[in-house]
Structure formats: structure tokens, C-alpha cells
Image (tube, rainbow, N blue to C red; front, side, top):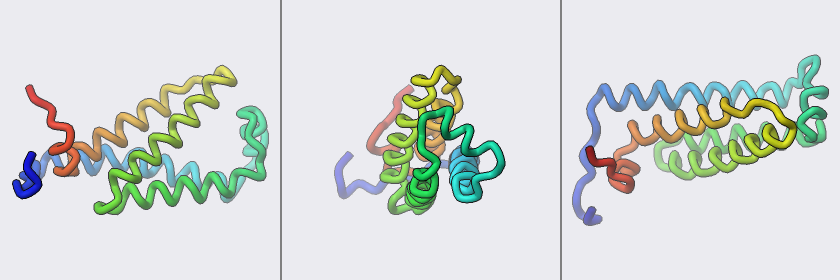
Length: 131
């Protein structure tokens, strides 16, 4: 697509579907970050099980919130999606290493990118899916 060619917006239905799809991983990342800050009962056992020192929780929570904020801002949403994808890749690797289920990290990644694709015309222009 030529840089001078305007990018056509999607339909309102597509935009709202993308927003809802995007909201689900955003809520999960925010919840996960808050749990890292609050560290409720059983939190340290879970981190130990995954092989992550509890002392890293605050930094991981800040990282999650920062990447999620980038994802929420329209100008930086693609960068946020890339960074959150990297974060999910690390989470997937950790769960695979300890033998835990990791389907949720994959689902979050699909929702993350699917929601962004539906709500972001620039991404649809970059990755045109043809029927």
C-alpha cells in the first residue's frame, strides 16, 4: 500500500469486537500485575514452583503494566503487542519447563493480536488478509 493512500477504517462492529477481544488480555495482565504487587497468600509458593524468585515479582508487575499501557495507547499499540508477545513467550517457556498447562498464554496471545488486528487499520494494511 502506498504511503499516501489513506487506510480505510473498519466497520463499527469490527472495531467493537476488537475492543472486546483486546479488553480480555488487558484485564488478565492487569490482574496478574496487581497480584505481583499485593502478593496474596500462596503467591510465593506459586512463584517458587515456577522457579522465579519472589524478589522479581515487583519488577515483573511493573513490566506487565508498562507493556499493557503501551498496548492500550493507539499510537504505541503495536509496540505494546510485540512486547506483550515476548512476555507471553517467556511465560509459556516457564510453564512448559515445569510441566504446567500453557494454553492460557496462547489464548491471550491470540486475543491480543486478534483484537488489535480488528481495531487497528494500520495493522490490517500491513498484514492484509484476503479471502
